[in-house]
Length: 257
Image (cartoon, rainbow, N blue to C red; front, side, top):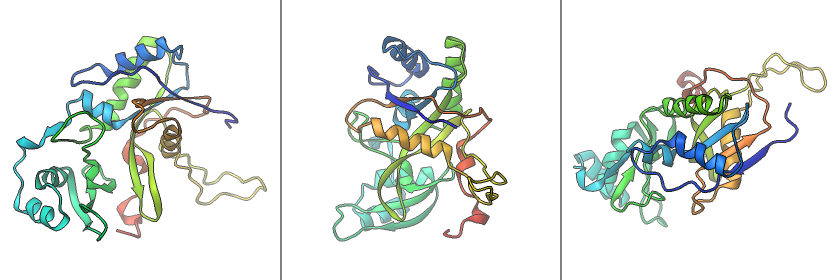
């Protein structure tokens, strides 16, 4: 059990460009900051830098909206080109609404990766381009694995990698960082069958470790701080062949779909 964990934003990370070697950039910045990776470290990296390095930015001028996108655009007062990108990234629209106090409405969508999020995680902020939209990497787990493998080769230690994104929550105000891609870090810790402090068997306890790690990284990151990567050190965990999808509730168990 970990009694103390350090959470450190990695300083000096430059603006990432399409084609950059993200593992090399992060490794250089960590060395320069005296944060050479150690065995058991976990890197939490914001989705945006992955998307920038992998060229996941779509100029709106290249998008022709469909009739469905135009319809949603009119109802929600949204650019139909952005709506078209949202629809392309989604398997279905769960709900679309615009409150009287909103300039533009929101689409709650099931993303092609399986999770439910606002606007299918399509974003227009904090990546330095006008009239463009950013989408998630094609395979977040593979993106994380490349960082993990590169660090193992460069530093000779096994680390974990979590790709984070910011989600709202249906029954609570505010946003929080969650895990959307993993390499080696367990998605959850299955405590079922273990005993509590009074010797009673745990029946359903399953901490969402990856999301807890992602949320913790948000404590040292600011939207305007240009610190898209965070180092967690001191956490006890066992490497596993995990995936971001492992933390998504199965449809047959979802009482709210």
